[in-house]
Image 1 (cartoon, rainbow, N blue to C red):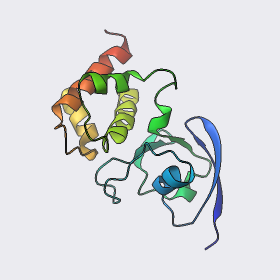
Image 2 (cartoon, rainbow, N blue to C red):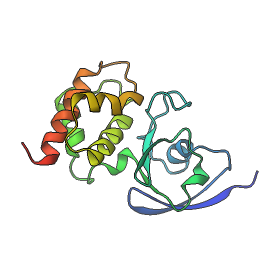
Image 3 (cartoon, rainbow, N blue to C red):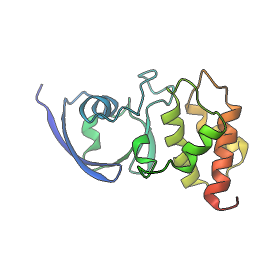
Length: 159
């Protein structure tokens, strides 16, 4: 199979890569671009570990082909911080011990950022609903929910 040339933007930086037509965006991110923060949990779009944004929309990168990134703006967990300081979401996940093994954490952080950009003042119920596609087998969800709620307060400037 001939590889396809893809021009895209990842975390605000122009990026080009070659990929097989059947290669997932997840595989491209991890194997071709060495952006290994995005994790593979299930490979079938059921766990949310591979969550990234594509043109501002939350997607499971295991279900998106790399060639579909042509011309798109992709956001990964590596683009959340400003390189010098953690993003408030990352800080709150640490502060609330809302992470353990780390497989689900990048997807949860990307999903939380997408949620709070869409809804800066979510209720606990709205958070639980929005993050329902992100599975965690280590922490339970209470610490995660508290971290998201605390992040929302700080991001709104209410703290």
